[in-house]
Length: 140
Picture 1 (cartoon, rainbow, N blue to C red):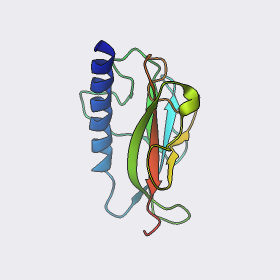
Picture 2: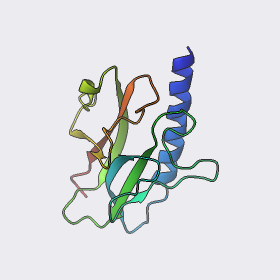
Picture 3: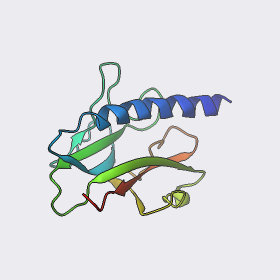
Picture 4: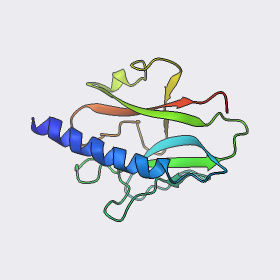
Protein backbone atom coordinates (compact mmCIF):
# COMPACT_ATOMS: atom_id res chain seq x y z
CA UNK A 1 0.00 0.00 0.00
CA UNK A 2 2.85 2.39 0.83
CA UNK A 3 4.53 1.67 -2.53
CA UNK A 4 1.25 2.26 -4.36
CA UNK A 5 0.69 5.56 -2.51
CA UNK A 6 4.26 6.68 -3.28
CA UNK A 7 3.78 5.77 -6.94
CA UNK A 8 0.41 7.54 -7.03
CA UNK A 9 1.81 10.76 -5.49
CA UNK A 10 4.80 10.74 -7.86
CA UNK A 11 2.50 10.16 -10.82
CA UNK A 12 0.31 13.08 -9.72
CA UNK A 13 3.38 15.31 -9.39
CA UNK A 14 4.50 14.23 -12.87
CA UNK A 15 1.06 14.91 -14.34
CA UNK A 16 1.08 18.35 -12.70
CA UNK A 17 4.42 19.10 -14.37
CA UNK A 18 3.22 17.73 -17.70
CA UNK A 19 0.01 19.78 -17.63
CA UNK A 20 2.08 22.89 -16.99
CA UNK A 21 4.13 21.95 -20.06
CA UNK A 22 1.05 21.27 -22.19
CA UNK A 23 -0.42 24.71 -21.68
CA UNK A 24 2.85 26.63 -21.97
CA UNK A 25 3.68 25.85 -25.62
CA UNK A 26 3.65 28.95 -27.83
CA UNK A 27 0.69 29.24 -30.19
CA UNK A 28 2.92 29.38 -33.29
CA UNK A 29 5.07 26.37 -32.34
CA UNK A 30 4.79 22.67 -31.73
CA UNK A 31 6.32 20.31 -29.21
CA UNK A 32 8.68 18.44 -31.49
CA UNK A 33 10.64 16.24 -29.09
CA UNK A 34 10.91 15.25 -25.46
CA UNK A 35 14.02 13.80 -23.84
CA UNK A 36 14.71 12.39 -20.38
CA UNK A 37 18.08 13.26 -18.85
CA UNK A 38 19.65 12.35 -15.53
CA UNK A 39 22.00 14.09 -13.10
CA UNK A 40 21.70 16.88 -10.56
CA UNK A 41 23.31 19.59 -12.70
CA UNK A 42 22.73 18.11 -16.15
CA UNK A 43 21.64 20.52 -18.87
CA UNK A 44 19.38 19.73 -21.80
CA UNK A 45 20.81 19.41 -25.30
CA UNK A 46 21.01 22.57 -27.43
CA UNK A 47 17.56 23.78 -28.59
CA UNK A 48 15.87 21.98 -25.66
CA UNK A 49 14.87 23.36 -22.26
CA UNK A 50 13.89 21.74 -18.96
CA UNK A 51 10.13 21.45 -18.50
CA UNK A 52 8.55 24.45 -16.83
CA UNK A 53 7.36 24.01 -13.25
CA UNK A 54 5.54 26.01 -10.63
CA UNK A 55 7.20 27.59 -7.61
CA UNK A 56 6.45 24.58 -5.40
CA UNK A 57 8.57 22.23 -7.55
CA UNK A 58 12.10 22.21 -8.90
CA UNK A 59 11.36 20.28 -12.12
CA UNK A 60 13.07 17.06 -10.99
CA UNK A 61 10.61 14.24 -11.78
CA UNK A 62 11.97 12.32 -8.78
CA UNK A 63 11.65 15.28 -6.41
CA UNK A 64 10.83 14.04 -2.92
CA UNK A 65 11.25 10.38 -3.89
CA UNK A 66 14.96 10.03 -3.04
CA UNK A 67 15.78 8.68 -6.51
CA UNK A 68 18.16 10.01 -9.12
CA UNK A 69 17.67 13.51 -10.50
CA UNK A 70 15.44 13.04 -13.57
CA UNK A 71 14.58 15.93 -15.88
CA UNK A 72 12.28 16.21 -18.87
CA UNK A 73 13.63 18.31 -21.73
CA UNK A 74 11.38 19.87 -24.36
CA UNK A 75 12.11 20.95 -27.91
CA UNK A 76 9.62 23.36 -29.44
CA UNK A 77 9.56 24.79 -32.90
CA UNK A 78 7.95 24.74 -36.28
CA UNK A 79 7.17 21.47 -37.96
CA UNK A 80 9.83 20.96 -40.59
CA UNK A 81 11.48 17.55 -40.52
CA UNK A 82 9.63 16.13 -37.52
CA UNK A 83 5.92 15.48 -36.97
CA UNK A 84 4.84 17.17 -33.73
CA UNK A 85 3.97 15.19 -30.62
CA UNK A 86 0.22 14.77 -30.26
CA UNK A 87 -0.07 12.46 -27.23
CA UNK A 88 2.00 11.44 -24.22
CA UNK A 89 1.54 8.36 -22.03
CA UNK A 90 3.44 6.55 -19.30
CA UNK A 91 3.88 2.81 -18.92
CA UNK A 92 5.37 0.70 -16.14
CA UNK A 93 7.35 -2.52 -16.12
CA UNK A 94 8.73 -4.71 -13.36
CA UNK A 95 12.07 -4.87 -15.22
CA UNK A 96 14.16 -2.62 -17.44
CA UNK A 97 13.81 -5.11 -20.30
CA UNK A 98 10.08 -4.29 -20.46
CA UNK A 99 10.70 -0.75 -21.65
CA UNK A 100 8.47 -0.37 -24.65
CA UNK A 101 5.20 1.24 -25.62
CA UNK A 102 3.40 -1.90 -26.77
CA UNK A 103 0.62 -1.37 -24.21
CA UNK A 104 -0.80 1.37 -26.45
CA UNK A 105 -2.36 0.88 -29.86
CA UNK A 106 -0.93 2.81 -32.79
CA UNK A 107 2.54 4.15 -33.46
CA UNK A 108 3.98 4.97 -30.04
CA UNK A 109 7.66 5.27 -29.21
CA UNK A 110 9.79 5.90 -26.14
CA UNK A 111 10.96 9.46 -25.59
CA UNK A 112 14.62 10.11 -26.27
CA UNK A 113 17.09 9.28 -23.53
CA UNK A 114 19.73 11.94 -23.08
CA UNK A 115 22.69 12.35 -20.79
CA UNK A 116 23.09 9.40 -18.39
CA UNK A 117 19.43 8.37 -18.64
CA UNK A 118 18.11 4.89 -19.23
CA UNK A 119 14.63 6.35 -19.77
CA UNK A 120 13.25 5.15 -16.41
CA UNK A 121 11.40 8.06 -14.78
CA UNK A 122 11.64 6.19 -11.48
CA UNK A 123 15.39 5.44 -11.69
CA UNK A 124 17.02 5.07 -8.30
CA UNK A 125 13.76 5.47 -6.36
CA UNK A 126 12.80 1.80 -6.20
CA UNK A 127 9.57 0.33 -7.42
CA UNK A 128 8.51 -0.22 -11.00
CA UNK A 129 10.38 1.09 -14.02
CA UNK A 130 8.28 3.91 -15.51
CA UNK A 131 8.73 5.03 -19.11
CA UNK A 132 7.24 7.85 -21.15
CA UNK A 133 5.85 7.19 -24.60
CA UNK A 134 4.94 9.65 -27.33
CA UNK A 135 2.73 9.55 -30.38
CA UNK A 136 3.26 11.90 -33.30
CA UNK A 137 0.59 13.64 -35.33
CA UNK A 138 1.34 12.78 -38.94
CA UNK A 139 -1.42 15.11 -40.19
CA UNK A 140 0.02 18.41 -38.93
